[in-house]
Image 1 (tube, rainbow, N blue to C red):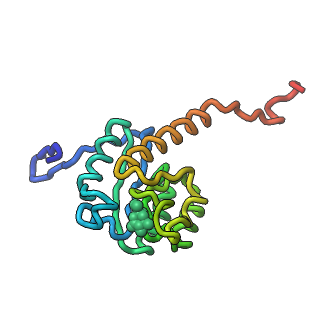
Image 2: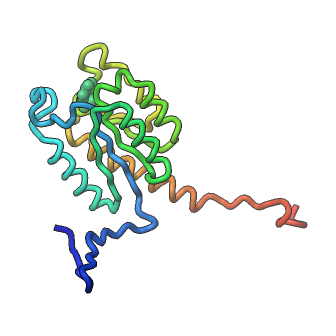
Image 3: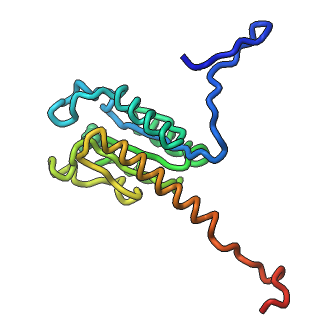
Length: 188
Ligand code: DQA
C-alpha cells in the first residue's frame, strides 16, 4: 500500500511518489508472449513469471535512483506508440521485442525516429537458436544487445543504460561552452 494522506472534506492524496527533476527515466518494454513467462517453453525461457521479473527490475531501479515504467504488449502498433511517446517523457529504453525482433521494421523505425539510447534484451541466446532468430532489426538502432543471460540480462541492461545516460549527462555538463564571436570581442 503506498502512503496515503486524508484531507478534510474527503479529499485524498495518494502515492506521493517523488520524482526529482534530475532522476533518470527509463521505459522497459516487453514484446509479445512475454506475458506467458513462467509457463511458456520453460526449457528456453525458465520458470520466472513476468511479475517476478518486473519486481526485480523495479528493485534495481530503486537502488539506482531511476524512475522505471514497465509495459508488455502483444501488439506491434502499441509497442510503436509507446516508443514514440517515450521521446519526451523518458531518457532511454530497454526493450525485449520478442518475436518482433526478427520481423519489425516499424519498431526499428520508431526507435531510430526518437533517437533515445536503447538496449535490446533477450532471455535466450538468439544467435544459438534457429537461423531466423539470428537476424535482429533492432540491433542496428540499439546501443547494445544482451542475449542468453535470462532475467539477469534485463538487470544488466538497466545498469548499462543507467551508466551510459549518467556518463552522457556528465559529459554534457562538463563540455566547454562555445564562446560566441560577438561576446568574445577583442579576444582573437
Ligand atoms: C526472445 C527471443 C525471440 O526470438 C522470441 O521470439 C521471444 C523471446 C527472448 O527473450 O529470448 O519471444 O526475445
